[in-house]
Length: 438
Image (cartoon, rainbow, N blue to C red):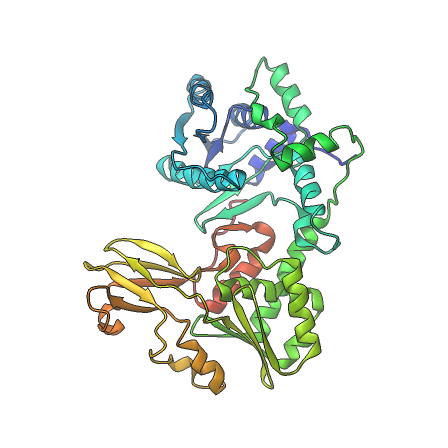
């Protein structure tokens, strides 16, 4: 059976590693895991020498069950008795008819990040447990037969959200039953969410399927292997990849002879940035890319909205021209254009962002092959006044803030990939990721 840490010990180790001073926002639903997290954190901070750590808390009401509002008030009362600042955030947006779990997760983290800013927290902590980890790996394993699939490393104990705040999981090596035993011993209860038994959800079906398996094991070294893979891919990017106009990537011919596993991971990261994808390409897409690289010295293919061109001077990756849509931003608005650039209209007039094929080619692209150079004009952002589309983008430079998006690592970045994300950031000229608070 997979080794587990006692919850109190895990929290003590976590607090010992925190930078000083730190204010933590505890994400608490009222269930046993999150209630145990808040209770043990509060107890350890009160009893042990951790004066540099303070707590706040937030509860997200997903507005999916009528009982949730009252449950949030129960949590607020619990926090009040401990002198912990607490806020309730409600997901009031229209709910999708499919993919509700993923949509709820997106909404939950966005609301928690807002609460963290309001309560001046340095990091968010969640009550994910070893049971959650086992379920996550089991679900991912059903979708992959590859032993080197990075998803089989499971959840990271730290994840950077929206490039702005770290989400920490101090109980990730603890069993749920042990957390509940701590609560019972201290005279504490918790709220049982009926959706945890709803077989419409994949996680519930997985949980029930493995519930009787007391010998369930996970690979304790998988996370470290993924970190080392990210480090190798980052080194490959730093040594062998050049970016042009923050949107075209060039790999020299020698780079394509690099270690296949590191090359595959680096290419997946580049594809997500070049194609403006919030996720890394799937296994089948990457299998095709690797076959393409191995089988030809010239030619082209597309994958993940990215055009790959094999040229005598190496491999080029860039957004394909198809499907690049325009975007109108009102004064003060900001949005992601084409999944590749975060753009803010700082001016007083509406602005249109589009790919103008008549735009000038940036100076740093002069040395590119003619075909690659011609392609660039159809994928770079061009800015114009909505009311006068002939207006030169030069007149809008002072009104527009534009930065490249870090692909799959802009929204949710597991700490495994920190070095790789920073190598990508350096490559396209954006700020490095926040340093983890551990």
